[in-house]
Length: 219
Image 1 (cartoon, rainbow, N blue to C red):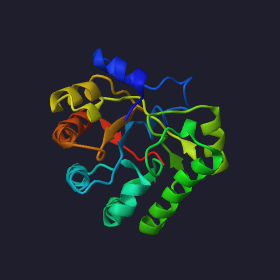
Image 2 (cartoon, rainbow, N blue to C red):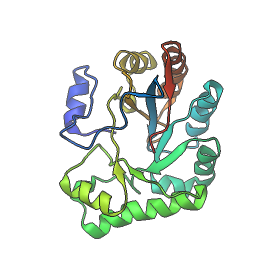
Image 3 (cartoon, one colour):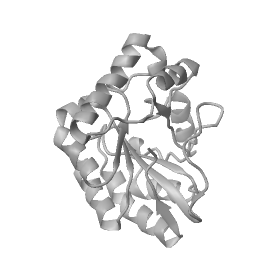
Image 4 (cartoon, rainbow, N blue to C red):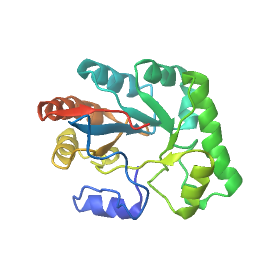
């Protein structure tokens, strides 16, 4: 999900990219090994309704993605987090309950991130190295607290606002019209009805592959 400024922009039909001066770089950029690379990410899962469907599509196309999961959903659906990791995807930290991390005390921040780390590690055997703050809400305090916990803050550069359910065709076009080498694409597998995202995904993947893109995990 995104913040109020992004919501206003999306209402006008814009595709939101996180500015470089708002947060750390959205992610790796350019190419890897001479090939065009994009980074597909999914937020707010795992969800029993949509995560397995999205995993199936990714598997069909041989694509690996990065899943920024909520600790409370990991705790509720631990086998799904294990499945995400087992299928070769990266599982990273999206906080425990999706608060605005800028508004938390230091102890609450540490609990949101640390409890999620422990839940993910229990199911994957790995501690997340990346943190995606909910709503993309980042300031100097969030950056410094994340760094103190050994976390890289990772946002995005292409946001089709799939969370707002604009239709599968709109999700597809917003991604495909704005993707560039090094783009970090924000999609969702949890937090609500993600059927449009799942419907749009096969065309996004097949089209980007036809354009010569490869997919990599962020963290």
